[in-house]
Every structure is written in C-alpha cells, then in structure tokens.
Amino acid sequence: MIIRRRTKPLVLQKYDATVPRLRPNFPQLQEVQREQAVRTKGFEGEKAVDYHIDFLAAEATILHDVCLTVMGKSFQIDTLVNTPHAIFPVESKNYSGAITFDTVLRQMIRDDGRKETGFNYPVTQADLQKFKLQMWLQERNFPDIPIYPFIAISDPATIIKVKGDDQELAKTVAHGAHIPGMILAKNREYAEKHAKIDDRKIGNAILRECREFDIDIIKKHNIKASDLMPGVACLVCGVVGMKRIHGNWECGRCFNRSKTAHHKTIEDYLLVVKPWITNTDCMQFLNIKSRSAATRILQSSGLIYEKKYKRWVKG
Ligand SMILES: [Zn+2]
Image (cartoon, rainbow, N blue to C red; front, side, top):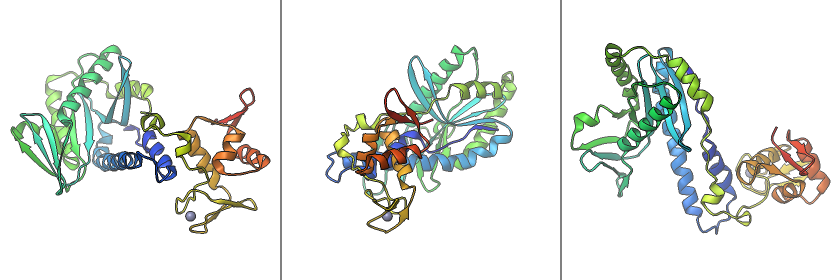
C-alpha cells in the first residue's frame, strides 16, 4: 500500500513561483534558473521511478518523499519500500547521456556529450542515508531491521558505465524498471535469514514524523524584495503584470482575462516572501492602487484575518 504519495516538492514550488518574478538583471538569475531546472528534472525522474516501484504496492508499504530528523538534522529519502522482511530506500537519479561509476575512487562522472561533470558518489550518499535511517529506527525502538539501499537511474536512455567492480555496483544501481525485481529478490533472501517485521507499523511511524523538506530560497540566493517584480501573473502565458480592468485581470501579452488570477499571486507571495500578507503588501504586490479593492480581494481569498497583527494568513 502506498501510504505517502509524491507531490511537487515545496522547494520546487518556491522556485517556480520566484523565477518568473526575478528582474532580468538580477545578478544570480542564471544560478536560480539552473537550480530550478535541476529540481524539475529530479522531480520528473522521481515520478518516473514511482511508476515502477508502485507495482510493489500489494506486497509492501511504500512512502514517497520521506524527510525525517535525526540528531537535529533532517535527511531525505526519495522512496521507502518496507517489505515484511526489510526496508529498501530508493534514491532516484536523473541524468542525460552516460554516467560512469568509479568504484575505486568512489566518484561519479556524467558525460552529456559536451563535457564531463563530477558528482557526489551516489553509493556513499545512499550508505549515509541508510545509517541515518538506522539511527532513526533505533531511537524509536525498531532495532535490527535490515536496510538495503538502491539507486534507481530514472531515464532508461541513460547509459550506465562502471570503472572497477561492476558486479558489486550492479547489486545496488540499476535503471528504474529493474528495481522492483531486485527488491523482491533481496526480500526473499532476507526472508530466509531474518524474522518478519511489521512493515505497516514502521511505515506509519515514519509517516507520523515525515516533514516537508524546506529551504529559504530567498535567503539562499540573497534575493531582496526589490528583485521580485510585483504584479499579478497571467495563468496562461506566465507574464507578470496583468492589469485590473473593471474587476477583471487582463494580460497585456496574450489578452487572457481572469477574475481570479490574483489568487495564485497571493499564494506565491505567502510561499516565497512571508507566510502572511498585509493590506499594504497586497496593494504593492498585486499592483493595485485602491485600498478598498485590496481589502475586497483579501476578504474573498479564503485567508484568515489576524486582527492583532492586521495581517492575513492561510487557514
Ligand atoms: Zn498572458
């Protein structure tokens, strides 16, 4: 059973809300766009791997996008498959071109046809996550649970090369489509040696403590309020700065009209800038001159008014 399903990660939602609003001359624009592209590709890859892993739903407890805290620090696991005999963390990797795992120097090199780029060695990352998950489970009185991590290469067109011990690497790394079969085979091995575990109970314990992974991207990229262009974003073409004409928002580029386009803009503000909005913030960010129009918009936005602070927050 799948007890936690993947949604668009909070951090990617923040990038998607921020990038269209950054001024064209913002110094770190390229860096922010690159980060957005990497996270988008990662999310696409995770969904492609889910497609294969989810076939195990009948015989395992599956959690997508797990974020837990151990010793005050959070760690993330793309997918967790709990079978009746072991836990299988699966990390998704989405790369174009060819990737080479060097098992001796423990490094990974991607060759996209233009240049070679080095990356953190995914096997080391997976081992580290295994260790953290082990600690987390021990702290909650689930000792001695076998954990076996896998690395799923999400794009079937990615060529996997190995420099060194290919047999050893093939025990852990494979294209997404092979991972369910590898999990079942490993589970059968554990079934012979280990006692049964309560995969559902462990899954529920993890689910209870799962947090949404978050980063303050405004702080990370040193984005100032003046770097974000105000205005309602067109829901059709994405351009920022729809004009308010007789209670309608009209796009100057594609001429799309909408009565409710401001909802998304207010949501973006709460997501990226701060978790509340005042009447003045609303006038500035939506580019409206009338205070009473801003009040009407906020009143009909489904937000809750905090009288003490004169601000609106999500319910
Ligand atoms: Zn438009």
